Image (tube, rainbow, N blue to C red; front, side, top):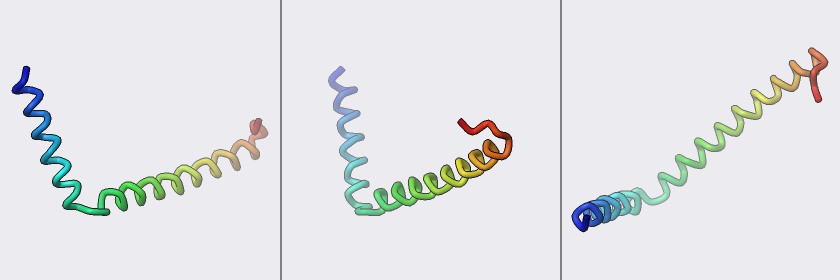
Length: 59
């Protein structure tokens, strides 16, 4: 059991070393991905709203 816990600990330690080496890149990439996703979702929502208004099904 101790070997498993230490293996997980070593894996996480190496992962965090890589993340600290990358600096702000992961934060920037995730922020850009969320921003593009938000814009895409809002475009789809606008399309759905226009269709609902046209069909008379807007609540």
